[in-house]
Image (cartoon, rainbow, N blue to C red; front, side, top):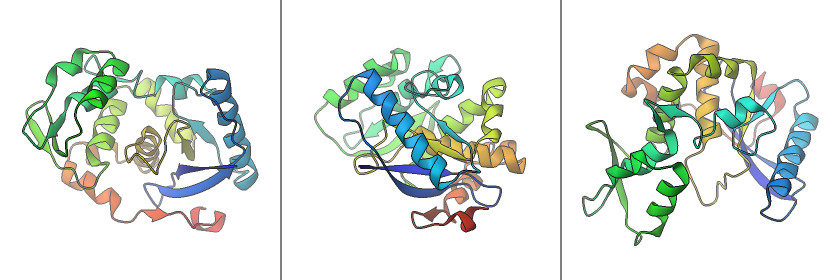
Length: 220
């Protein structure tokens, strides 16, 4: 068994975070990761039979989920993952802006190869963004890209649970599944433009987040 943090979107809350146990298949091959997606989906179907799940990653069994991965989704012609990595500002003032033009895997590998330094903020298109809440910039960037791809992102309103089989909540903070849950909430409430056009308002979405120990009754 293994644990996975999943994100549940409702009309009354941007997202719930809940830890789910599922049957884990060890290994790094594509087939093994896809088996884990299936096993996680099966676990969620038993827990929440009335809710629809969408895996957001390149391993998704749903084309929509694959296309919405940060390695595939673009904003103004650049991959979300590459924009995110290129926007990191480190404690010594350095920023590797050239990464915005690199493939996502190249941009991520470059940042991971650097001597470990503290990230003190993000800078994108000449605008500085804070590091708190910790996933704010990533989510805001992702949601902005989703709004710019309406034919694809409009499908998110049809789903309630969002997962990312690659995400390890014990090691990372930013998650494409969380961003999609937020966007699903904004679609369901008709507030996409209102929140995307005002990052200060967008920041308030994190104020009422419910974590982990929730029941099906809580999210209906």
